[in-house]
Amino acid sequence: MQITNTGNLGPMILQSLAPAMLYVPTPSMNYITVCDKASMPAHGGTTMRFMRPRALQPPTVQLGNSGIDPPAQIPQRDIVDAQTAFFGTGEEVYSQQLAA
Image (tube, rainbow, N blue to C red; front, side, top):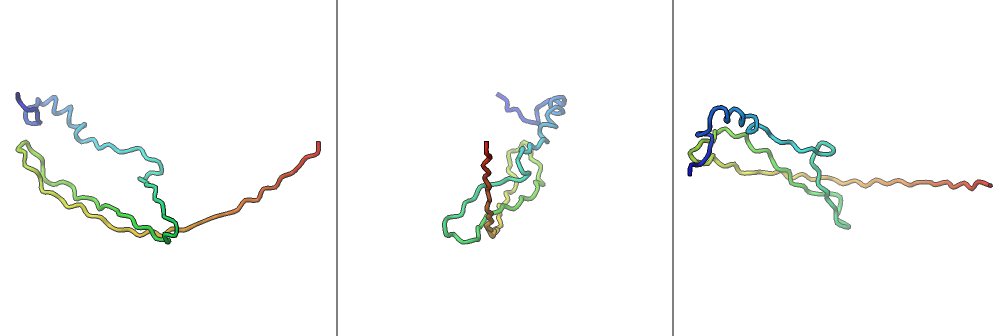
């Protein structure tokens, strides 16, 4: 049984696969950015620490049919400290009684 790869496909199939191979799906998100809910414990202070991953370098080695892996990259992250702020307001409600 022969393994199907890009080396033994016909030119018409390769041409139809090209857009699908180059397609990068993008998620549909509210508020444009990805958000995670974070909760602060009681009496936890006003600083929260978050980890932000750094982007990997774009691949420069073309993948072939040889099965050799490209050189690996080490993922890195930055530590971001966020100051929390607390806001509040009151509400005044006036009730009127109408005489019937």
